[in-house]
Image (cartoon, rainbow, N blue to C red; front, side, top):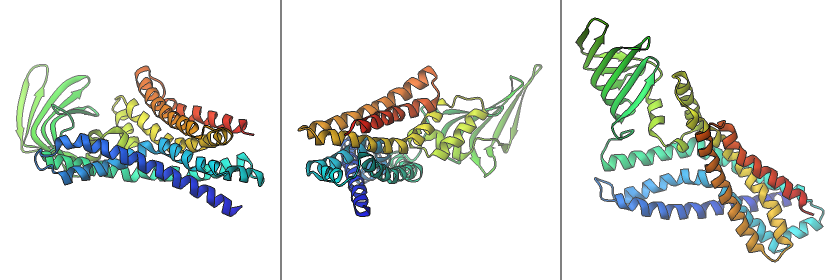
Length: 352
C-alpha cells in the first residue's frame, strides 16, 4: 500500500507541475511579445526584457497554481484511467475515498509550495523585475502620474516622485489641527533616517486666524507610520505583495481611517490560494472516474479545463463585485473555493 500511495502522489505531483510549466511557458511567450515593444527605450535591451519577463513568471506561476494543478492532475490521472490502472486499484480493494485521500496528500504538498512561492519568492522576483525595468528605462520610479498622497495621523503628505523608498522629492506636508489646516511644510526632498523623514531645506508656513507666517529652516523631522516599507507596498502591484506586507499595510490604513478593502481582499485571496489548489486536485477524482467509464476521456479533460477557467473567472468576478458592493473580503475570496469543494465532495459520493 505504501508503494501505491507513493505512486499516486508522485503521479499527481508530476502531472500538476507539468501543467504549471506549460501554462508558465505560454504566459512567457505572450508577456515577452508585449514587453518587446519597450526594447530600445533607454538602456532596456533584449537581455533586460528576457530577465524581466522571466522574473515576472514567478508571480504568474503562483496565480495560475490552482488551475494548472487541476489540468495537470487531470491529464496524469486520466492516463492512469486510460491504462486501466485505476480500475485495477479498485479491484484490489482501494476505495474512491482512499484514492481521494492520496490526491489530497499530494495537494497539501503542492499547496505548501504555492504558499511558499507567494509569500517569499514571487514578491522579491516581482520587485527585482520592476527595478531592472525602471533603471533601464529611466532610473526612477514614480508611484503615479503627478505624484502620490499619503495620510499619516494628522499629516497629509504629497510627494512628486519616489526616487527610492527612502528618498522623496517635491514634498509638501499639510498639518491638520482640530480639523483646521495649521501648517504647510514644503521641501525639495525628504530622506528617511531610520526613525523619521527629514525634510531639507524646509519652508514652514504657519496659518492662524490673524496671520500667516513663513519660516525657513535647514531641516524638519516628521515621524509616524509612513515608512519606506509602507511606500514599497504602495508602489507594488497588490497581488504580488506578501501576506505580512498586506497585513502591515492594512493596519496602517485602518489606523489612518483609510479604505483598506482592496488590500484585505488581496490578503484573503492569498490565504485562499493554497486551499484552492487542494480543492482543484480533489475535483479531479470524480472527473477522472467519470471519464474512465465513458468513451469521452478527452471531453472530460476539456471539461476540467473549463472548470479551471470558471474558477478563475468566478474568483475575479466575486473579488470585483465584493469591492463594488461592499461584501466582506473573506466571503469574496473563499466563496469560490467553498463552492467547488462542495461540488468535489458531491462528485466523489456519486462515484461507484
